[in-house]
Image (cartoon, rainbow, N blue to C red; front, side, top):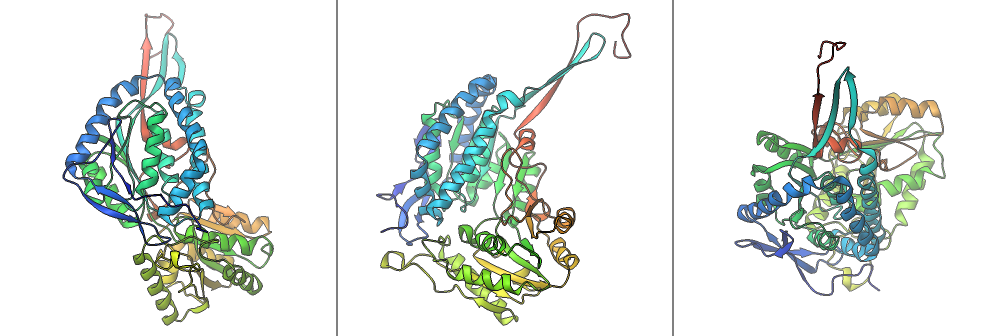
Length: 494
């Protein structure tokens, strides 16, 4: 029996422009291959600048009337979309898994997180009502939240549903027209979301999809009618897009990579900690910016290390852990493992060569859970984002030494402490540099309305990509001061 349901035939992806599905002219195409099998499951166009301009123009026209539509009416479309998303949850979970390598459960979890963001956006009609105050006798001030116009999101392969759903429900509810450029490695889920947006009754052009690679992204960055740009991906690309987008006068919020640290101390709960560590570094096959990649073992935690290795060894690629996105990812990780071993690390668990049984998965992109011990802080395995199911254990003698390693990382997405001591936990909460900190939580992703965002080279730009601070990214506040008649008893404002 297959681990995931694949599309019944090869899917030909098209752009969604002005409410219509169009094949962009002059665009080459490339194959979409399932990480599970290596087989072709789709084809995606690589949209040129002219195709991007066509989508932006349709969005620009739509943005005018949509921005004037009352907020309560805009939320009615989102409510319809949310219902459709829930109704099609299982189909979308399998589709996301088939093209990204996730397990179906992980695909489902990403969609459920997206539903939370929809709920947050739906709450804006009650929560974000502006402010009005009589600031002086006869003088009032207020602010009005207004959309930017055309905005865009560039999303990664590892969360084909969740990351787009971080962005467009909030952006369109605030009155913007949104253009989604999904990763060319995972376009199928994006198209399915687009179909649901059309079915939900959004006016043509309010939600658009343009497929493509770097040239497509560059066209969005350079187009003068795109006012804001959100990105999630690697740090080098995030930095480049932040610089280029800012140079073109856009608002840019670009989330990059990470090197997350789990600090484990001797009093850590022996029942909770090992499984939380395993779940953190193997979930989504380690292909997520919140995955644990370094465990800072403080003092004598050898029994916990042994339990972690045993639990990880029992995890079967396929049923228990998904595939890597492509052959290049497998080669890169296998090279990194070999280098760490050559540099002196001890290979406690070797996942190379492990894959599900059966010919169906013989050409898939697989790597089992891998644990490296005795990793020094200066090794590449401790410093670089490997982006796979590889845990590097760095041994330190004190909590201060652990925090020094965490603080020295240029990244700043996540850090967690595993302890039963409140004072130890508070020391890490206060001392960690990361923007998201967990206490006995291996993947400290905040739930809505608490926002998602790191520090350092994990984030370029202001604010966070979800939650209340995202509102100021996707809109601006217009301030209005009114006075209707002169007052003899007024203040300096009269």
